[in-house]
Amino acid sequence: MEIDLTKEQDLISIVLPAYNHENYIDRSIDSIISQSYKHIELIIVNDGSTDNSTNIS
Image 1 (cartoon, rainbow, N blue to C red):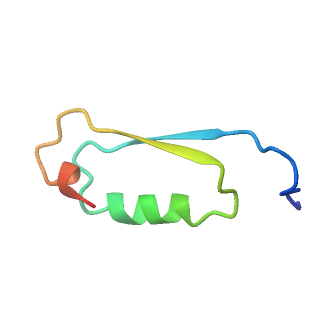
Image 2: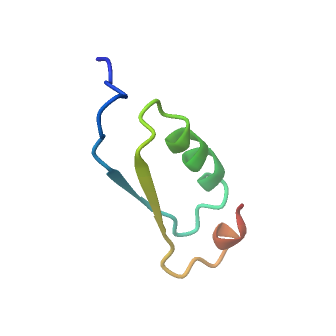
């Protein structure tokens, strides 16, 4: 499927739950932002993690 980059694209929202996932959050974010479709918003939801999930940059 080819994407026509000359017209406005729909915004895709991606919600990523991140409760105690410090070992996986970097890879998950990298995977999402490396997709060919670029008109996205990434919402990361942390519900009180007790690990370093909130410190990942």
